Length: 134
Image (cartoon, rainbow, N blue to C red; front, side):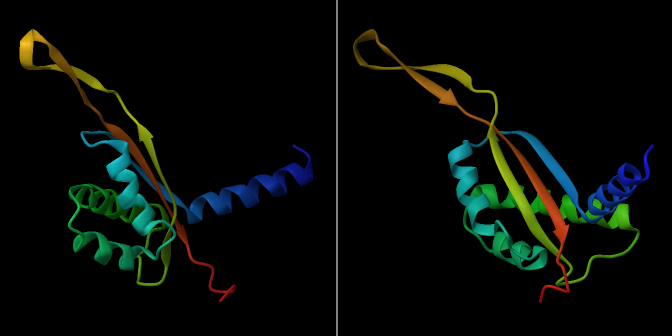
């Protein structure tokens, strides 16, 4: 490998070590409801976001809280040290639409209404906060 390519590879490897992610598939909640919760915590410091999610009234917040705890644990396992308050932030949280289960509900006069039971996939990425930029 040329010397320049090797250096860029080392830089990318070091950047990847600072980030960690967790993914939760097939959550039986509509993506629209989940995006409301994701927008609440996007870009926040991790331990502050855990507090916001814990005291939120939304049902989807409990699932995102579980996912955030998993991402923090993944970061700790990758770096070999405990995460402290002020170390980590949520760098990205993406909510994608999952499979939709279609059902029929009886309606008046022999008709039937379609019921769509939606699901979603959430990917949460945790990154270190740069101390130099502050």
